[in-house]
Image (cartoon, rainbow, N blue to C red; front, side, top):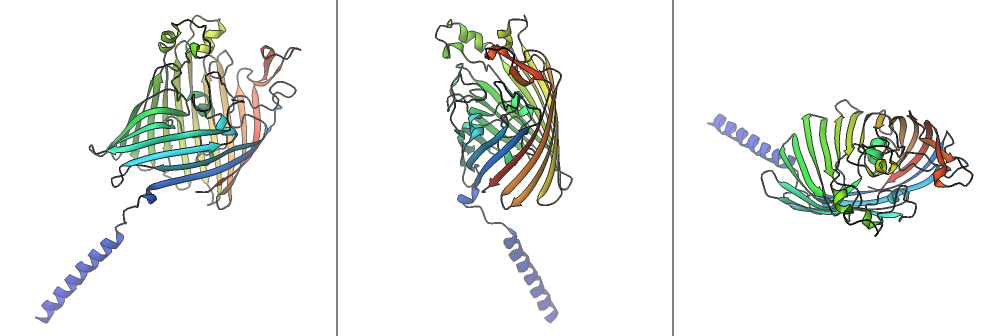
Length: 415
């Protein structure tokens, strides 16, 4: 009898102990504020042009075909504040707000937000601040949950992003600069069919467009897969008419220009592969293919009957964290501008780029980067200088096929 009672007591204690442990291991649900994601940083940089691009000419101190590191010398790149909340089962609504200031902000503007139709890169006269993202989102109780997002948000395309701390290198590659858009304004819907497959699709005003410069829309989407643990892939795309209606710049343009512009589509297919299954190692590959019917720049040359433009390229990335503070990264890239439309060369151009970056965490959120980059072209697209005495833009001439730079950058992340 005593054995029976002892045995029952032991079983009861084991059951109660398991219940207590299970309860202790169950995480408490997040509060409303805990579901928010804060991100903020500032960045400064200094770029040395080792090939002397444009010295003595109109483009003195210019790093041709670069984006945020377009100018030689010191740059206050950006100060950014971001607050975001994703929809959840407990709080089925969300939102995002990203505001920035600095030289980089001038290049991120979309039409209608600190940018007009006649503003062109490098946007010398636009504002030094930007509303990078502003959207609301919500979860519809359908299946595993259908998420809707409306407003202005960053593009689905590309491996590299606007925020420097989230990239492996300081400079952005040619795919980021020439092949894809930065932001969209519109509505997208996302749905997770399984743990390894998610789909997003939506309607937007176009490439970096918040006012509809041609009174038309584009369609964008993503197929995201996780076939293996630590291995992600995605197919991203956008298609639609992206040419600006000439009547928005010149009132004397014929009325039928709108139908002409809207009849010529631009599309991009963007593939991203990333693998982090080896400790401290990051591997990634980005492949892009783009095409535009009757591209405006090619059409303006007046030298071809076929005025379509095609571009494609790839970028391979590898990074290794030697310690908690030290990381080295390499990017190898190729970009084919088959018709000279994306580079502005006017002829078929092949670009190769090799980038090596050393990153070191100096103190808390303070991170320093030292980067060397070599760009090579089969055509003369670098070292643009004046070729005529009157120093007009018609007299600008590219003299080089290569560009070498060294960049020093510092950023501090507050969150």
